[in-house]
Length: 341
Image (cartoon, rainbow, N blue to C red; front, side, top):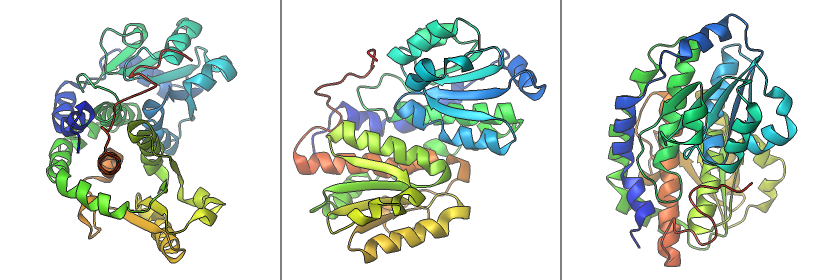
């Protein structure tokens, strides 16, 4: 396997997690926004980003709505062109951009003109987003070469703490304490993981990533990562949506990564994995109690699962690259920061 910078970024994730946890701070400025949210100042919370940043918003979207808030999750490209009326004082914007310089995010900041207050989560302290946000929240992933890996996990961390802050759950930051060790323990066996997946990939032409609830963050980002890191077509969707048509595609060339996810829908996901196998496809069951090493996640609090579920997907990109004889994460047509709409 060609060990390029993307590979090194994957192995650097435990350090990035520990550094982010040590410096993660919502800040005193956010208190007025929290009070405004509880006092009815805001009619809605709009969560927005592009690519991996957009997918990372899924757990916060579910958490806020479960707490009785009205939260909408929308890509920034759609927000600025189709839903500009939401850029108003009664909207609280949560904007995620690893670089803080994405073309859509820069346009959003210009269009907003300080009308809606912004909580901005970014990995770049000197970016447009960091400078323009009413409450900038910085991750400490460090420089990243291409495909989002450590910036994705650290964004999930920041959003988890933000969700706890807005919902009044003071222990959210402490929940993150075991994460670096859990990720490190999984990545310690990366060579075995890559070899195990490489054998499973023989003859595979279609990869589906299937989840529900918070795991939809993983299915969305995972499919994106597979396409941009090794140019292998993959599709992420809910387990329910997969039954409404795509199940017809299943044959021996199909590999489905099925995420167990929340207890409430675990049985549905398990049944789906079995149905895929009965149809002649291959299904990997990704959970913390599976018997297969590469698909077995370290046991952590349920809220941290989305931060671990992406790890087997990263291993899959390395296995695909090894089989193809290419360097994973080396871009041909795109760049790390997408500045053009």
